[in-house]
Amino acid sequence: MSDGILVVNAGSSSVHFSVFMGDMEPSRESLVCRGWCAGIGGRLHLHMEDAHGVELGDAHGTNGSTHEDALAAAFAWLERTYGDHPVAVAAHRVMHGGATYTESVPIDATVIAELERLVPLAPLHQPHNIAGIRALAKLFPALRQIACFDTAFHLTQPAVATAFALPREFAEEGIRRYGFHGLSYEYVAGVLPAYLGTEAAAGRVVVAHLGRGASLCALRGRRSIAGTTGFTALDGLPMSTRCGNLDPGVVLYLIEQMGLDAREAGDLLYNRSGLLGVSGISGEMDVLLASERQGAKDAVALFVYRVGRELGSLAAALGGIDALVFTAGIGENAGQIRRQVCEDAGWLGIDLDTNANAANGPRISRSASRTSAWVIPTDENLTIARHACAVLNALPRLEGRRATYAQTNL
Image (cartoon, rainbow, N blue to C red; front, side, top):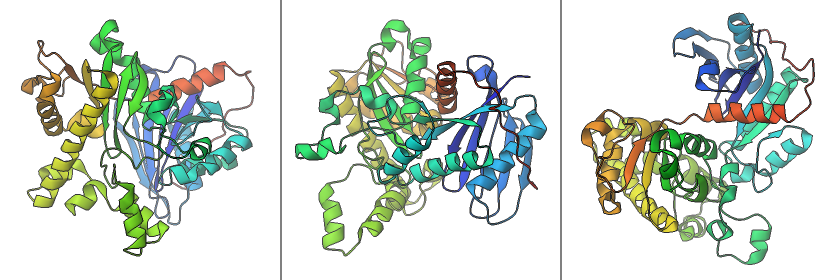
């Protein structure tokens, strides 16, 4: 029997989870299973698969569900299926750690209070991350929990890269660029030597995390030195439903001239913009790529254009570029998007290998290309599990901290 590390990513209507064996350094080989529980607020839908993607079960529960119900159902299923891996620690993906949390930390009342304070900076994610933490604390009061932050990786950026041109007192209140998708970038940075070689991995690399949330990050020495997201996850590239880079005067105009209040403006920019807003069809890239409607084509074109613009800005921040890496859902699977981005970036020395790109890489540039291009799958859950292991190893071992699985009618 070995202890398990439970990785939790709690959203508004679902909880995604993975379990890694806790008696070894977390790796893809130590993954036990993964799954999700969707339908929070309505009828729960629980799905689980093993480490190889083989479905282990799929079931529905009752209506009126909460994060607590979802996690109780997940734990009960884990007990029945993997009772030889009792959960010893739960590690949560937390969207925003502000400037306070430079690394993962054990969760206590002080940490939760700080996470609550940061909710306005990540309103789409932070409240639900906290809901998952509170749910497990109620279900299993003795279970140790750890917070792993999407912002922490970017705290290596120099002050000039994080500053806004606002009066200094606002910066002292924490209004600055933070950056997001850091757990994904941290994973990619960690595996770069295996793909590029040690010397090239330490060079000037731009990683494109392109998914429903999208951003670019400039790495030097495998450390974040600049990025496209800022104070909140609204900044930078247009995303599935988020607007991306926007003249702040537009927000003022929406409020002063069009009569939107702050809540309505926030809903517009977070939930009704981006690919969805431009296309009028969907915020999902695969749907847009399959559509012949002009709105879909316009949304794809704008997305590619903005990636190219931001890529140029990060190449400037790096003083040149040696490699471009695509990752996340769109980056790993949408060859058409990669092709258009690389062709537009020919001026940066990228010579695309169309056959390699069609095969999803890993290297998608020709051998003589001055700037190499790659597809590297990300694994945020593995990054979180490794953080949990490191935090646990730094703390005194306590007995009796394992979770007793909850009962459920699923």
